[in-house]
Image (cartoon, rainbow, N blue to C red; front, side):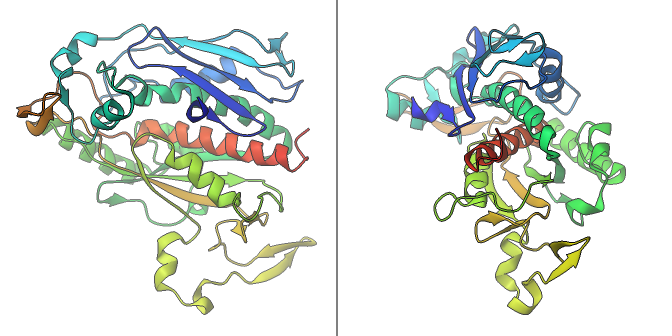
Length: 358
């Protein structure tokens, strides 16, 4: 049960499977009086939904959210916010051939060993379709954070070997929604899209990175030592399907730097303490320092590919198989709103813990 609940004070509980009747959940701990409508949440769901372009899965789902409780006359009541998004376009027959085999790099084998049973239709709850509930929770959290001047944005910064240079402060992040791959640089976006189409045509898949930036967070969020801000953020990001790595600030590049190169000098700006650089990524000693919180999440190539692979059956027989069905050749563009959602819920949870979010 605990594995299906995220957060301490702002809590998301979710349910549902890829080919079940619906995905849904409950958000508890949302402050009362927050402007919230289904249309506000729907905007975020539309960014995540399948079938957006030729570089995503062709599964066609409207992903319409229904708010069941916790909202009255367009504002939150402080009560649990119940919601549901019904599945309407399942093609479960595409997975019939997979019911007796373990797909490489999927959850099939491990979940079977853990539970003794598995939903082979699209992976059941191990499917990224579970992210719908996260996006709803994140949409609600964003509405609360906006009252404090806090914004959460993310964008595609890498697809395969195509890497967007520079930092998150170098780009107008509002431009990320202007193309299918969600990259704020049109020239690099075109290269990323071309690469995704190439691997899709080859029946393969490819990975990449999402960069996130959280702005407007006041100094002082984070609870040392085991609940450091970056630790909570990393936990949230690494819970996302296909996430393989997390870094913030200078990240792994810090391993090859000297202290004289890495330290962020302090200075005064408009009567406030700031840093001249931001290699710390907005967090020092596990606590936010008021600068932009910059981080990156690495995603692996989608495990389902349309080429023949070796695997093992549930009877222990070595077999070869070719996947069928509708799948993303690259998960990164549709992961962008999920990264934002998890970041928003993490920040709001810590804000409420600090006593500043009531």
